[in-house]
Image (cartoon, rainbow, N blue to C red; front, side):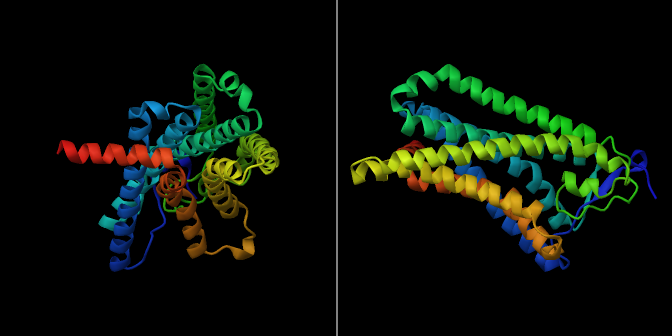
Length: 310
C-alpha cells in the first residue's frame, strides 16, 4: 500500500523487453517524430509566409499543426529516452506535466477540428455569408476559444487526477502518463471523484461529434446538388482531408478507450496508444498536403526558396 504523497516517480510501460527491440523502437519513434516535425513545420511556415493562404481554412490548419507538434513533443521524447537508456521511470512532476500537456493538445485538436468542420460547412452550404460568418476577427475568437477551453479542460482533469490518493503502487500500463492508467492506481472510493469531470468532457465531446456529423450530412447534400462534376469534385477535395483526419483521430481514440474488455491485451493496448498519440501528428500534414494543390504549391515554393538561398 502506498500513498500519492509518498510517490516520487511512476514506472512507465516498456515498449519492448529486449535491448535490440528497444533500440528499434527508438529508431522508429525518432523517424516518426522527425516526419511530424518536418511536415507540421512546413505547413506552419507555408501558411505564415504565403499571403494567399491567409484564409480561415489555412488559419485553422496552422493551429492544428501546432497541436500536432505539441502532442508528439509531449509523449515521444520521454519514450525515446527510456528506450535508449533502458529505463522506465518518470518523475511525479514530469508525469503531471505530461498529463496536462497531452490533455491540452488533444482537447485543442478536437475543438479545432470542429471549427474546421464549421468552416467547410459555411463555405459550401452558405458561401454568400462566408465573409461575414468567418471574418478574421471571428476566426481569431474561435481559435482563442478552442485553446482556452482546452487549457481549462486539461487543468481541471490534471488537478483532479493528481489530488486523488493512490493505493495501488506506481506502475502505469502505458508508455506515457495517461489519466485512465493513473485512475487504476487510485483508491476505490476516490476513483468516483474523477467521474464528474469525465462525464462533463464526454458530454461536450459528444456534442461536438454530433455537430460534425450533422454538418457533413448538410455538406454532402449540398455537394450532390452541384450541377457540374468539376464543381462537385472541387467541393469534395476540400472536405476529404478534414474528414480523413477527423475519422483517424476519433476512431483511434474511441476504440482505444471504449473497446470491450475481452479484446484487451498489453500488446493491443500499446499499439492503439501509439496509433492515437504518435501516428496522427505525422500523418495529418501528409493527408492535407496530398489533396490540397494550394498548400502543396506553397510548401514547394518554400522548400525551393530555402534550397536556392543555400
